Amino acid sequence: MISVIIPVYNEEESLLRNDVYYQVISHAGELIFVDGGSTDRTVSLAQKLGRVITAPRNRGAQMNRGAKEATHKILLFLHADAFIHLENLQQVVKAIEGKKYIGGCFKQVLDDPAILYRWIAWTGNFRAKVSRIFYGDQVIFVRKDVFQELGGFPEVKIGEDVLFTKKLRRKGRVGILPFAVNCSTRRWKRQGIWQTFLLNLRINTALVWNQDLDELANAYQDVRENIKR
Image 1 (cartoon, rainbow, N blue to C red):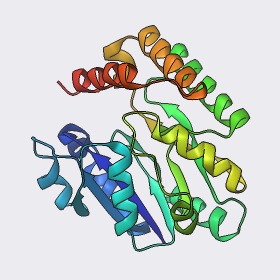
Image 2 (image 1 turned 90 degrees about the vertical axis):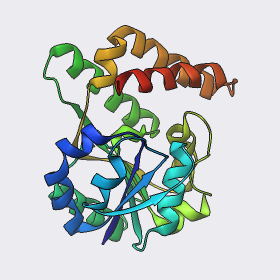
Image 3 (image 1 turned 180 degrees about the vertical axis):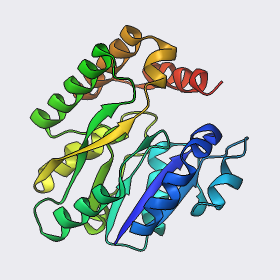
Image 4 (image 1 turned 90 degrees about the horizontal axis):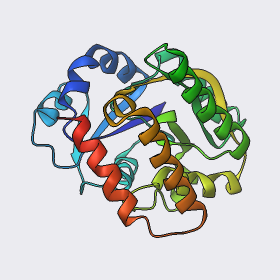
């Protein structure tokens, strides 16, 4: 069985759109929503779909809290605006229980079939394949005992996914399952494709060189706020 952990903050729109989907994947194990202080109907909607707990508004802190409360041996961290099929959750269980991987992610597919968005998804998947460093929207999964040994996600303003998976790849074999996670293009569309691409590039460069991320984190947070308006 698997624990699906979803950090949320003002995700009413996503929960309304994906309510049937969440009901389906809840059959694979437990569904844990970790709310960071939402001011819309996120909590009341999530309570109808799975277990709801609270944590300070910080994606790393929210996912760590969800992992702490999880009851199953496999953890999967899912963004509210992304979805994967039930049978693909079962593939995660097979990969972990078969000792093929200690963790990994999925192949990203964006929800707009335009050539440019397919290129964006391809570059992200290629980067992950080469570096074995994964983004959160690719759906990170991991054995719970390994997650605990690594100390969970760093509770930083931004880049917790990159920092965690850098540690994860040193711990053991990780991989990209050849199954799709469907991700929203809302951030790319509202912020602008090239602006978002350049912001992501700046963030990754800063992470590689251990630079101060506060300014970039504020810019990224502004993007997320604008998306939900």
